[in-house]
Amino acid sequence: MGQLELFLLRPEAPEELLDEAAFADDEFLPYWAELWPAALALAAALPAHLAGLRVVELGCGLGVPSLVAAARGADVTAVDWAPPAVELLRRNAARNGLEVRAEVRDWRDAWQERFDLALAADVLYERRNVEPIAALLPRLAPEALLALAGRPYESELLALLPTRPVADRVVRVTRRAGS
Figure: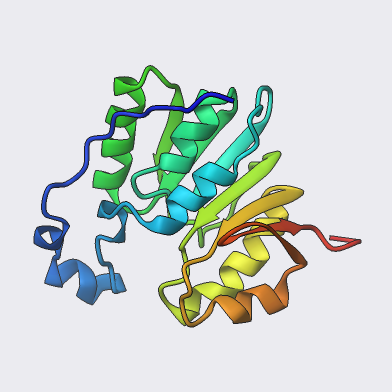
């Protein structure tokens, strides 16, 4: 398969986006502004053909996996709780001629939607996210691809979910029987 080339706008100085008031409110840091290796690993691990699949990316940040999924034919919804991340993803989707529904949303909230595939890359910055992610992934889709970054809480999450490796840094999560 040929290479996919994306043209991305990115914050020039992510460290300048730090906001003490936002951190005090919900320990918010601008993680979204970095192009993390786990996101690139997840994008590289996506199947070549996703036409007709409904895909959601949680904590999308710059949204590279979402953009790749859209380029491969998926109907993509990308969510992040940082409005600047969502706005930049919308601009990058347009810049690349791709359609991605980008929404400001806290993935810890209740979800009614269901998808064919869920994506998440490097989303475990805090321990408090382990149980919500473990509960949400199987409810959102029968299958998820989770990219790991070596964060301290990843082993706790992996112990809660049925997974198998599919690529370097990437595991497939499937529903347990009866889920």
